[in-house]
Length: 158
Image (tube, rainbow, N blue to C red; front, side, top):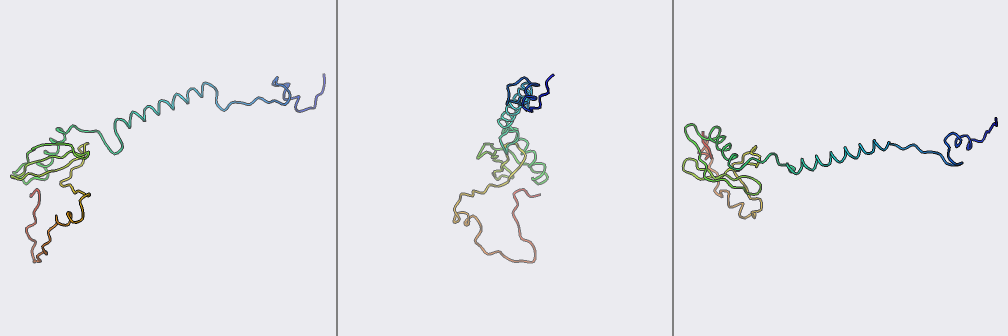
């Protein structure tokens, strides 16, 4: 039996590699790599499918007629004066929202809802209007001061 104290020879004799070479262990086995890639592909597909159905900021889109019926019910139950009701004239989509034209006490008015029918807006302000046009929409008359409140118009009196 020979006593070989050379460290290079000892390591290579155990592994069976040529002198100066060492065997590197892979970080993951081949099966683990295949599983990781497969899981990553499934996650990417699920994310793409999820964003395709519900774009950012948009919930489930409710059909316009169903949203109009829900909105009209809400208006009649919560905003209209007791004993009165609003009726639907038309519904259309405008700028990613539903615009509903309704008739209430003989007056035509527009109300707006999000397409997921979760938020109601009673007016729309065109922010692209020039300052001159936006200023003329407001009354230029000086307010009248009194000890009691004046007749404040409300779109849906109670």
